[in-house]
Image (cartoon, rainbow, N blue to C red; front, side):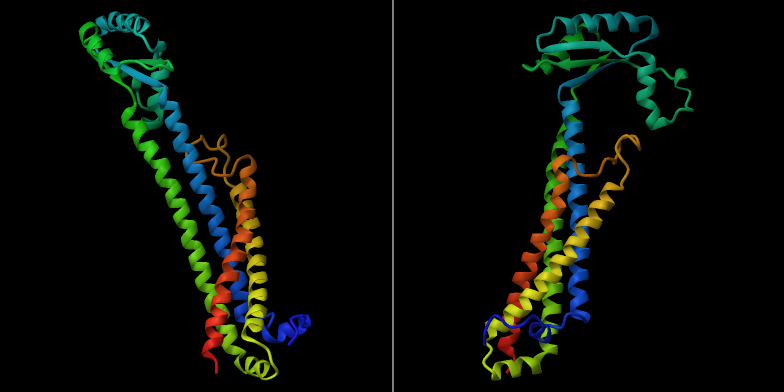
Length: 293
C-alpha cells in the first residue's frame, strides 16, 4: 500500500476524536503546564539562593556586646583594628535605626526595641584577596572582648547547597513529568489500536504493513501531543508572568518568573513533548500490532 494515502484514510485508522484523542492532547497540555512551572520555580529559587549567597560572600558582621559606658570605646577600637587589618576593604558601624530595621521583619514594627539592650553591629566588606578570619578573632578578643566576628559561613554553605539541590529537584520533576506523559500517551495509543483492531486486520489483508500502520498512529498522536504542549506552554508562561513581581511583594519568594531569554524556555517543551509522544506511540504501536492476530 502506498505511503501517500489520503488524509481521510489515516483518519479511519486513527479517529480524530474520541477518548484517546482528547486524553493525549489534555495529558500533553497538562504535563507541559506543570513542567513550565517546575522549571520557573527551580530557576527562580536557584537565583534567589545564589543572590543571597553572593550578598553574604564578601561581607561579615562584628557584634559588640558591652556596657553602655564602654560601647563607644569598643566600637572605636574595633573600627581602628579593622582599618589596619589586611584584606578588609571597608568597615562601618550600623546606626540604631539600621539595627532596628533589621529586627523589625522578625519582631514587627510595634515591638519597643528602644527598651532592649541591642548590640552594636559593625559591617565589614572583604577585599578580593580576603582576610585571616582566625587572626582577626584573636585580635578582637584581645582589644575588644565584647566583639564577636560572624563571617556568615554558616549562612553561605546552606544557600550553596540549596541552589544545587533545587537544580537537581527541578530536573527530576521535569523528568518525572515526561515519564508520566509518556505512560499516558502509551495507554491512549494502545487503546486506540485495540479499538481499531478490525480495521487493522482489513488493512493487513489488503497489503498494509505494520510499519505503515504504526506510522499513521505515530503521526497523529505526535501532532496531538504537540498541539496540547503548545497550549500548555503558553498557558504556563502566562501563569508565570501573572505571578507577583519581586518589587511588588517585598522580594521574598517573589519574582518567580523567567528573565530575559529565559521566557523562550517554555517553547522548548513543545518539541520535547512531541518527541516523547513519537517514541511512546511508536513503541506502543509496534508492540500492540505484534499482539494482534
